[in-house]
Length: 326
Image (cartoon, rainbow, N blue to C red; front, side, top):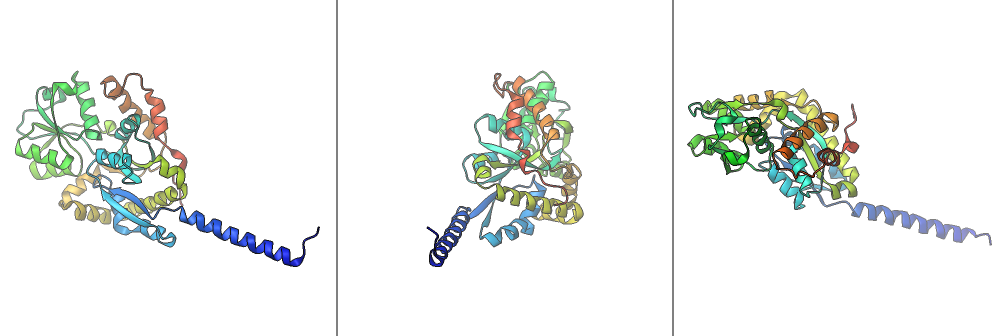
């Protein structure tokens, strides 16, 4: 039977209503807010928070942005694992260990290639090399790049964590403990490490820029699967902040000074050790994190049966890599 005009009109109205309903349902699936960490070891994220680029991008969709401070990779990864944030800043090696231990995250963006950690001591301590840490008290934040850096440094001297006396503290407290003489050395992290150098004359007695793994933005896998468009929006906002940072280095420094309450020379030292030019996830991060993972496996931190290369491949997620010139 050929439908009459009235039935065609009714069908059209029904389809229009259905389309409108589907649109409303899709929009209803958006989260009410997107939650990110901010950290003084992530200059791009700090500038993004200050400039409000992400808030601007999400406002048309009615999505709020909530910022949560993390004091180290360990805290950012804990927040991600608990579902307290959707995006978190962490060192590549720390993210690898977390994923191997069951934290369902993906690394989607490289916010920096830093030399942000070294082994630090007071100028009068008599400590000059990793071998000198045998039997010494060393402040460290477990589950972070400085912790992994310490393990690798000890390993280079034929030592393990058990040969030193680790004092577990968050990064700022580690610096304070060194200043007070409560510990003999500290696995440092910028900008607190730069402050220790400039303000106290502390010595970075062991450095290895290649053993610093990348600063990566991680996302909960569940969030990335459910909201890939929002992941792209976050990365686009990060890219806007990174471009702004490169074009306005004084503004980047001022942002860090305001957040850390540290003097300009300290922040300048941090930034001179921080490369913001390589945001895409790829072979460079894979090589760095695999080297760290292999060293950690040899040290017994990662189980012997773990396929480190496969774990790195599972962590790094290039699907959302920023497009040049976007």
